[in-house]
Image 1: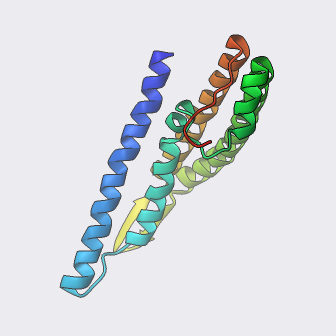
Image 2 (image 1 turned 180 degrees about the vertical axis):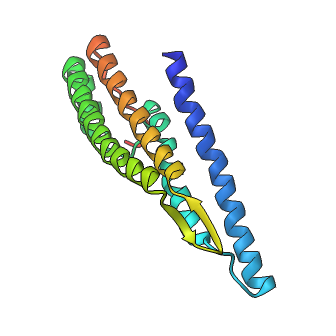
Length: 170
């Protein structure tokens, strides 16, 4: 379990570094617009692709630390009244999450294969281009790691009988 947590945290660390890259990209574009009188090419396209990667690489750690935006008012109450029922409900929530994340990951995998095989690029030919597949690969990896994290949490809830509540967003 510790190794799995490190994988998720490593992906979140990469996500954090990419936030810094995105900030530098935006600042460089603002500098170019205000000082040099022109915009940098592909800032909006690259920023949009980076934003998707940032979110999905950090998703597994967000799930593991119970930081998803959800309301635990009912689950917290149920955990106090019937811990086992709350654990089952929490496991159902995690299993549905795992299924949906895996489904989106599968669709992303099909898109990734098509982008890789077709040599798809982001950008303006002759000016600046980036291959699309690294962004798609990061998206799929983030989704699949998050889906497995949901499965691990469901297993933990069912074996330990404890619902994951109290993430600070109640």
